[in-house]
Length: 221
Ligand SMILES: Cc1cc2nc3c(=O)[nH]c(=O)nc-3n(C[C@H](O)[C@H](O)[C@H](O)COP(=O)(O)OP(=O)(O)OC[C@H]3O[C@@H](n4cnc5c(N)ncnc54)[C@H](O)[C@@H]3O)c2cc1C
Image (cartoon, rainbow, N blue to C red; front, top):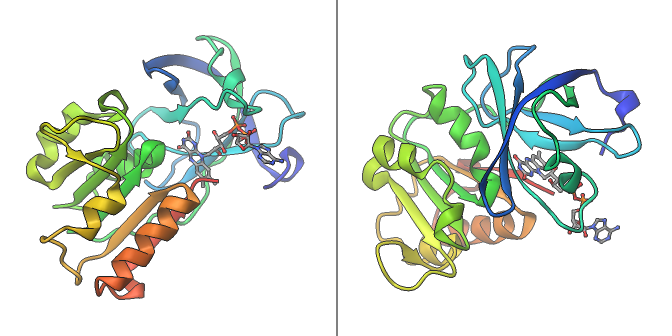
């Protein structure tokens, strides 16, 4: 992880910092630089805490940058991020990263806040006809579900690991993929989430016949 002295960053005013589910927030601030959907910014509240990276969740044309984050109670930054109020200062780096090349008919597979880069791509009008498989522990963590249901319809698949049987697939994204009859191995797959989720999903896709070159991944560490 880089240090603040190696990064080009500004102090921004927080516009809003809204709890959208228990322990999950969307923080917004002004966009000072253009970016490509899929890029990240480093955020911080003081030079004493190393920069943490966050995928931009908003559209390339939005005047505000939105960051979806979950609070780690034992983490260094997120318990402080969650306390920020409108008008407070936040350290924001220039956008960077190259998880930006997305094809039409893509299959996005995300766990938790790993949905953020895909939201930016969808809201930016990229990845036409995409399918999104999103994993979460409980229904309230299916962020942006209203927009996604309306936009993607049956191409929006929610995998809920702690739900009772009902209208959502019960289990993790990896369980869903293993039994997915509709898997089209010729498509391009984009994974985003923890290292564990990405490694396991990648392994399953390869074992189901998806060429390695069709799999792209962003790991949230
Ligand atoms: C490219 C990229 C994009 C990302 N995008 C997002 C995003 O959009 N949204 C989002 O919520 N997160 C994202 N992340 C994760 C984010 O950068 C932070 O890691 C996360 O928010 C936790 O930060 P924290 O400072 O609160 O926790 P940290 O202080 O970093 O701690 C995280 C966890 O590690 C444990 N830990 C810390 N130090 C040690 C140690 N020495 N040994 C063992 N365990 C330790 C802590 O107990 C805690 O459980 C992204 C990460 C990357 C790399």
